Image 1: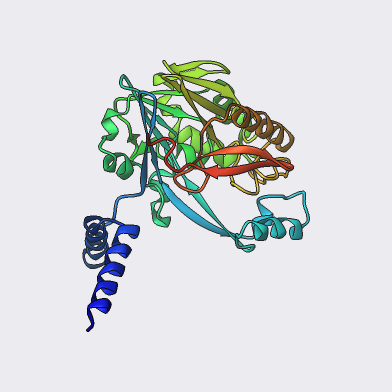
Image 2: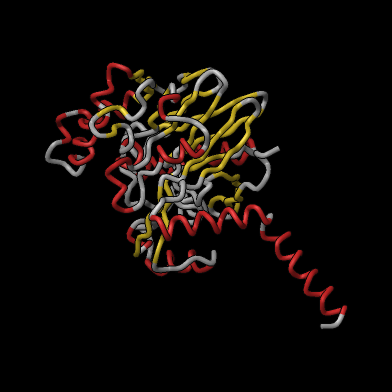
Length: 328
């Protein structure tokens, strides 16, 4: 082999490793894959660490789910072709959706606050319900969680509150919307389309009521975290603003559930929004604020790690995934 060929080969090899990952990281990935394949050991769920002033934030991927027929969930008041065209314009498949579930852990220095609990044990057959593993992978334990905040009471947010019939976060107190709780607990839900949700709340939420503070618009959760009413997706859906050392971030929960279909077309109806007109109005109000203040936000169903920015564009908003803004 000529000297020139050897130099070129060495350069390409070094360059490939330098661009893709450090050698130790590549080795770690290979070892993790080998253990997973050969011993059945499950890799830890993905997590993303962020900084906001003095707050440390961890986004945990509780799981993902692929579904078909996007037009039956998003843009239900639009022609199927319009939904397909918008997906195609954004380089997305027109026949399938990937949905992520992303609970958020906030370490304020005084409290460890968890927002939503994922699918829990009921989701593990489908590969979800991985929050507890994610918390441990981030260097915390479920016992350290001091406050659990429930943004609303759909199953993918309350599923992890209980584990084997006991509270999954043994030392936590709870914060939930008063309007939301009153709706789902009401026996009048029996015999209606909300009956399954009612049963889940009786099982997962009602046993925790004595340790729960029920809040409304503007309430403080802990210093630096406040609630904002964002009704529509559910009767008492709440979003939360985090403020630390002059920096702010919004947790938008299910205000928008798809980074293209919900943000670029905020007025399109979504099957899972219980009050569709109110949900569209709330989307515009919340994301107008986020856009005008240039705030980062974490959306529960945004593509993992679920954090980004929006700017007003056309009929709605353009989603800009975060890169290193919350790392430095």
